[in-house]
Length: 176
Image (cartoon, rainbow, N blue to C red; front, side):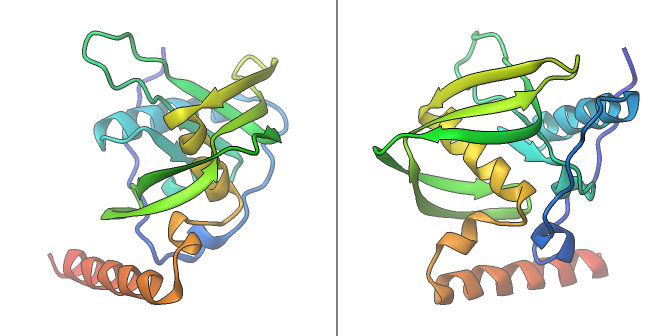
């Protein structure tokens, strides 16, 4: 097992968060190390999902684990080159947050269920249908891979307000 490293999470606005990530293609040790680091970073944050662009790596890799119940075994998933192949007509609204936009939450409407195809860390093809929080999370993280943030679904005024708060937060952190 490789030593995991926590990586710094980029805070919006950052041009890398608005850039579409490139496909992983072949699964290498470098990709596996990235996935391990991302899981470590996500659990530490704590969050339920993290996309590679959020740690400054413009590759199509995301990690997630939406198990929240005490005593339930964690279920860390690593999705390389994920692709939504089916969405339900039914919609769901969740209050979403993002590790790159700390302490800001807003309701976002998305398909209630999605089917996703991806490559796992062994290079195998995987396919799974997600619902509930898992469906929201996987869509939110795939958006990151496309250079899209959850605040892009909000009305311009609310989006600008959140962006200004993040700019202020970044200035305060830079001074600290």
